[in-house]
Image (cartoon, rainbow, N blue to C red; front, side, top):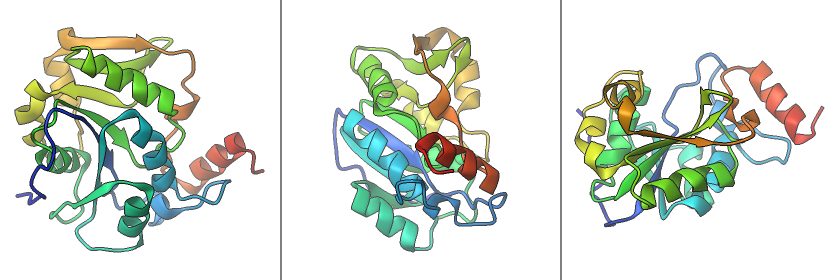
Length: 206
């Protein structure tokens, strides 16, 4: 169902950046949309994830294009998800399959560019310290990224559809380590042009 690159690393924490969605509510091309600093949405998400992990694997659509080029330039390794219009679950499976020997994964969203490096880092550090599943929580609300230890690799590789890793979280609620953070402003995703405008207001562009 999914063909991916072979693993090239062992024992590392890998960031899986999900960037294969069509962005239909945005009208297409949302991950290349420009932010207030003139960087692309997915490029910015990658740049904030990269310092917190040992490697970033960006999952992109099967057809090569400008998004793939931008993410490579930002420092990610690119995996093409060989499925037409892949959902979030398929994308996670593809990214995890491409880094099968990792010690753990941070699942991050390409359309959520404001998640600070500090929040990525606290999740990665929790995995390095032995957490099974870890996620930031602010005022009772769980945010992104979500980290999974290697023991969940088979379940993540079996994901399908567009539900992401919710089913894995639901099966293993007792394994979740909640990491309390004091700011959830970065958890705004970009689905529509109005979302992009809201993010840019945060970044200082009217």
